Image (spheres, rainbow, N blue to C red):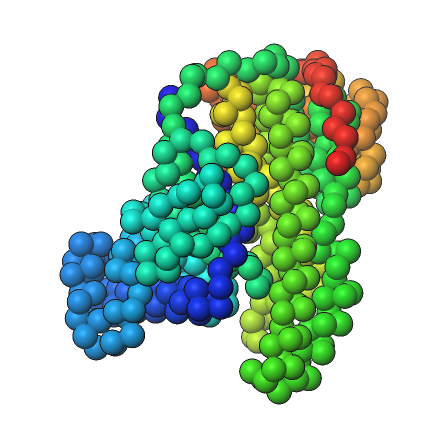
Length: 411
């Protein structure tokens, strides 16, 4: 089977190369936003969607109109138009929201599909119109390099090299299955009773972040002191993101190595973390409490947790199953009775029918695992009746399932 994998390294450019990379990223952003503007105007006029080929044929005209676009590599501008087309396709297929204009300073990047060279033995890389550049050679690059993406994070630049290689079909070393219930008080609770506490990376740095953001707001915009304050804020954001990624990679690696099947909730994180401010005419309720909850949800990184689990399990020969989350914490895993009164508090579960007691998150994980077994066995959509008919599923007597999971040690 073919495996696509990215290897990311920190670049060490000189001052001139940094200035050029900022210009290339700006040109890429300009082309994306211009294509978006044209697509909107074309749609308003009743025209059909403009594909990549037709849009790319306009690039020479744009270069005549804006001379500075000629300084950027043509292939990186073409890749920006491909990104624009992909964003619209994701919107049409209801995988993403309508594409939004790219803002300066957010996600600055550009990509080379060809023309680059990698000299890993000497820890250097050649990029079109940038020349040779050194990088921090932290690991071996496996496979054939297909493209390279240059991105900026804070004050640093990184190269992400996507490779392709043939590997044998993986066979899982583990044979166990586990259900996972994610939450705020506990980041992940397993169906065997074990759990992982949340890192809360943003919460730990929130006070310090507010302090430096206040200092930045008092500076004259775009002055030297303003740029210094901005770099401090960027460094805090980078530290928050790096800590969260490290935490998630450690957890997902341990879970994917120790289990052949993992079942999780099919959570719509975007909907769950939507603001409740409302409008001027109809203001929302409990806005402050909902804002705090949204912040806590996004601080956990549930979507990234699921994404990492999916590809790591596939690499290890395992499988990830997502099931509906309806009534998982209100269903008794012993007798199948469903009632809101079963969950007396955030942590306590006690069935009003049979008296079964356990931690509410553990009960949720056990029910998630049971639904995953039904999906794997007969293709049932978990508690499909809930989604299709908006009614509670019929009570099914279910014995609690026991699975094992190794404890994970923190580095």
